[in-house]
Image 1 (cartoon, helix red, strand yellow):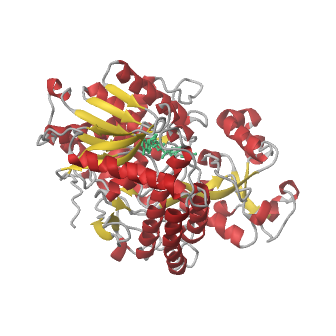
Image 2: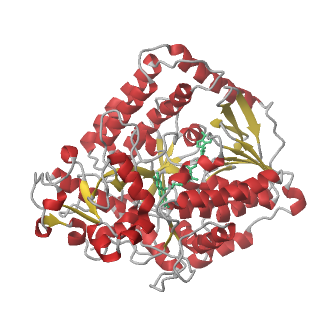
Image 3: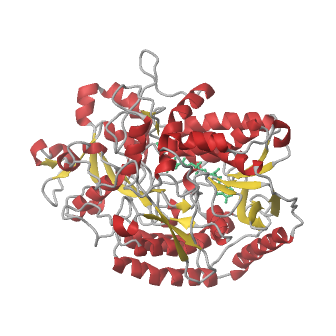
Length: 637
Ligand SMILES: Cc1cc2nc3c(=O)[nH]c(=O)nc-3n(C[C@H](O)[C@H](O)[C@H](O)COP(=O)(O)OP(=O)(O)OC[C@H]3O[C@@H](n4cnc5c(N)ncnc54)[C@H](O)[C@@H]3O)c2cc1C
């Protein structure tokens, strides 16, 4: 099927202006006649629901947490990018656009990325107006720091709690609309299906997580802003609740899933410490502004770090990438850490770690300055590892962090399923094969505050939406399917817990579809995933009942979806016979171990079409053309 990305014509810097000028408007008196469902109240969904409510639409906002304030966006630490050029260091909309296209290894759509860079400056103004306490210089102007893949300082931050502060801003805007009666909140409601009527998304089915009630909600269109699916790997830096169910259920109803194999492995996470660990912790990339990454030069060197003299240390990122040094992009930094550990030069238990050392910057700037910049991160590290990073270097290792893949969307952020919009980490996004640090918050808020309000309005303004209510057979069928699904989990009465399947799947994915993938490892994953899934559907044990709070039951639904998504992830990685960004196929590497793209055959977004349980997916390709930033081999040296 030919995918229409609906990119406006004209020069790249005029496209968004043109789209806005050409859009259909809904007059203020008519706005209140439209109902919009927004699933997800993190930065993308919270911003979208607040903005659409402010515009006068009736919005129903859903989240599985008890409050919008607990969305996973709250975990974001380091910062948010914007092309403000406050540092006068040569930044511009074009440079942010260029860095993002290059950072994504030329696998993102140019027009979307340009728009992202263009609206980035508005985000900062909006958040400052909301009272977000960004860090400031002594004179009162907003401060910036650097993040990976950029040679300018364009990252705005609030200590190591940027996501939390931005979310409080979006939450205030959202609550204002709740108070005004424009937004109705449905916390503790998990969306378990999308309902399609006459080819358009017209509602959702939810499970009330407190009572177990399965309920239908109808609307004129549906926005999904349900976050990323990194937890398919079981261990990741994501909050435990993050899952793929909303987008996966939409996929099963016809929305294409794009680039599922593009997973970001973040280089600076606290190494795994045991078999039964259920979560990994990120140490923000911002730490690489002042921390230096190194390993001993000698393999097997077990001396404590302070006993290893300077000339016996290998500051490998500074050595290999002198231009970007410790701020090389995440995919590259992660791979280099893996190479060092594979050479036997890793540190800490099992040799799966590298040092992130602040001694030099503490000497240069003083402990107080370092504490001001990263105090909460240092404290977090100390509490988890029992080691004081002011005195000994942190130990870090790459871990699954972010998913660039997600539901395919056109320029208007609408999926191929008419009336289904997707924002934030849930869509296949603007980050290509690798997201640059501090760009997810930017994208989520760009989608929520500045893109969806226009494009959703444009859709509603086009009319053609007949009257539908929850008595429609499509709602009845979706409710029935949802009930049967949960009943089946409860009745199975097998022998294994949900977590045991999830952990098994995660280990298989990390080992075979993780930082390095090969045809052999992917074939192995593809032969084993269906067997795990079959056993899950025969031998699962879920205790408790369906009409009460039951976290095992919630997890069962999510892991069932992960077990299908995992297979697609491996297929996607197998068909992409190239390395690009976070997708590293060992067969396609340059002699010095860098990713080797194949632009002639793979410069496309892979949009997979669900064909039914147990059936092979159909691959649709959206060709990517690069008219403004010419295809080139990425170099950070
Ligand atoms: C530890 C960590 C640190 C990070 N730091 C940074 C950073 O410094 N800078 C940066 O740019 N990015 C950072 N990121 C990435 C960034 O935080 C996320 O990509 C971004 O916040 C995602 O926002 P979102 O609105 O798309 O999704 P989320 O914030 O994950 O929100 C998802 C929402 O969807 C709801 N939801 C999901 N499924 C369902 C369902 N089935 N039914 C009902 N509701 C549902 C949830 O309840 C929630 O409200 C970090 C990520 C992590 C893990």
